[in-house]
Length: 78
Image (cartoon, rainbow, N blue to C red):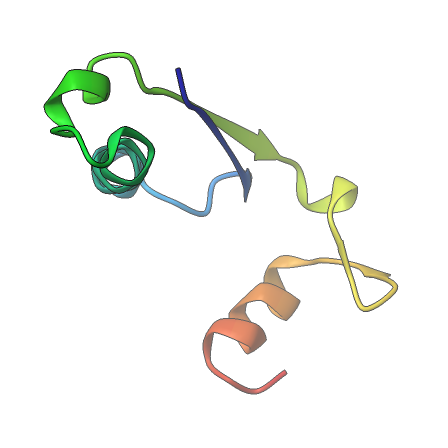
C-alpha cells in the first residue's frame, strides 16, 4: 500500500491546502500504482503523512530558510 510523506515548512500550507494535497496526490498515486486496475481498489489503502518542519530546520542553497526567503521564492524574486 502506498505511503506518501509530505514535508512542508511549518505554518505555510493552510488546513484546506493540506486536505487538497492529500486528496489529489492520493488519487494520482493510487491511479498509477493500481494500473491497469481501477484506482478505487487502492485509494482506500493509500496513506498520507504531512510533516511540518520548522524554518530553522530547513535549508536551501546552503542557507537556513526564513519566511522572507520563502516569500521571495514564491514571488519569483529569489
